[in-house]
Image (cartoon, rainbow, N blue to C red):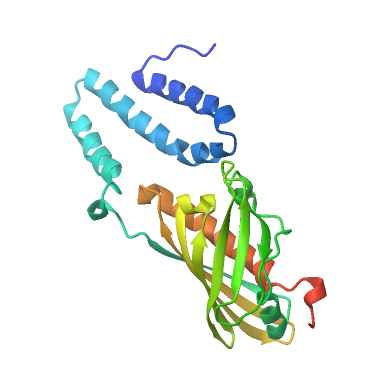
Length: 247
């Protein structure tokens, strides 16, 4: 029912759109991967279509420029020598309406999983549904269970690796959740500083390794998602629940 396309580029765009939409019912929760990568599909289709359309108009100079742009973008990440740095660090900072002591007490418990996730993290990503483990002594464990993620539940296991006044570091022991397919968690550092008797600034820093290529496309997406996760953890783990105030 769509109008007939007059160019190769238009035909490619139409075919890609129909193919991506048809994949939705088959992939269920995995459709989030299609949503994230669809701009790449369209970019490649646009470049291929433009090359064919331009070649028909005999414009070799423009065609050569397009090839020079497409080639480096397509091979980035295909080997270690052609990859950008995969080590990433993202930090979120918030002022929590609680005393410094109450923040530390909240951090000594598992993150709460009843707090709504940001909208972006609800778009088919694995969701934390249960968390266990307490304490801030070196070696104390946290286990966070993730459901969803293309039907592959799994657990993220962390341990307290370092503790100082106003500082704790959680090191990742293992990750069997679907998140591990996209990035490799390394550690989380939490710093908290009292601003006054009832307000504390909390900085949550996440270290991870990017596993998706190309970096020019997936790096911003992964950093954005991780920043949201760090903000969520401040609310879910560093902000005392009402019954924790004054423990």
